[in-house]
Each structure stands twice: as C-alpha cells, then as structure tokens.
Length: 111
Length: 117
Image (cartoon, rainbow over all chains, first blue to last red; front, side):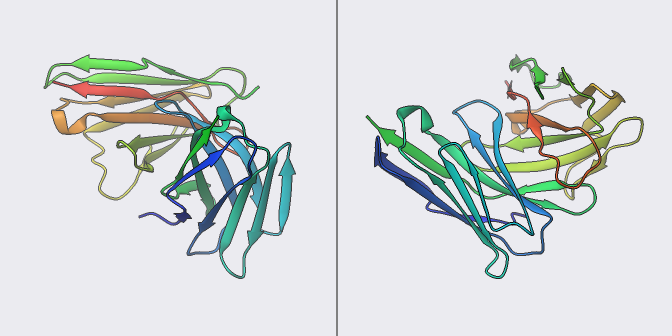
C-alpha cells in the first residue's frame, strides 16, 4: 500500500518561478528521499534526508522534513524547462530499506 | 558513479512467452536489488527485494512463480516474467543499493517497457 501522499498532483509554473511540492506519510521512517522521473525513464535520486535532519540543500533544491507532522517538502528554485518531470517522495522503512513511494507530482515548467 | 543498467529497454512479444529482464550495477556492488512495476501515470509499486545469493522476498499479492527473480552476483539481478499475458504489460524498473547502511539511496535503471500482444 502507498505510504505517502503528494500535493499537488500536478503543478504548472513559468520558467524562473519556484516550485514547491509536499509529501505526507503515515509511519515512522528512517529517512525520506526525493526522486525525479522523466517521462518513460527510470528514477533519478535527488536528495535523502534522515529522520533526525530538518532541512537539506543541494544546488537549487531544498528539502525540509517535519517528523512531528509526518511531512516533507521539496522546493525547486529558479525553475528551468529541464525541470519538467514527475517528482516522487519515498520513505525508507525497516532494516531491508524498502522504499514506499508517494503518488508523485507532475511538474511542468512553461518557457 | 552509481550507474544501473537495465536491459532490454523495450520488449514486445506474444502471449505465453517468457521474458527475462536484466539489471546490472556497473560501478558498485549491489548488496540489495529491488524490482518495481509502474502503470501509466501512477507511482512505483515494489514487487520484490532480492539479496545476492538468497531467495527474493516478494510483496503481498505478487506471484513468485510468475515473476522469477535471480540475484546470482553482486552486480546482476534478473526478473523473468513467465508465460506472460496482456495483463502483465507494464513498465518494470529495477534499482540497486550498495552497502548495508540504513541511509543508502537506491539507484534506478531506465526501466523496461513490456508489451504482451
């Protein structure tokens, strides 16, 4: 069963604007990860944030984690057309480190 | 680094055929590999987890006799869809994780689009 819910399901913005995607989950986690998927391709790992971390940056990406609210957000600043993709959050669970994915946000950056 | 190669990228075959998909970690040793299935515009559903040299662990509802997984080495896992039927048509994606730490990301292949006629 799906662990996470992502909001919004789809987002369309102009190039240069910031994009924010949210993810909520249900159970305790070891970490939360964000992935990007271009149409018809595999997933690309973006950021892993551990359960004891609150914020993490990587280039134009900023991820926050609030374990008390069981939620995370991904902010992409100064968006580019190449950022158009689906973005998934995934929670790392248990010793086997299975990932349970959210439904994803389809992001479209309009030039 | 951390490149995962999945082959083939696209398969079209007749109903009743068995199809093998390979997943290779090219520049790291994958202690654990995962197989996912994805329907159009939907999320990834984990099918099974495999560790090198041991039997795969299948998720609830996944038929282990239908989807045979072999993880014979630290760089190769295979998924065989046996006697495939049209309802098995889907996008199959593998991922690999190196190390045993609890905070290792998974690295994904580019997926295999399987179409059963």
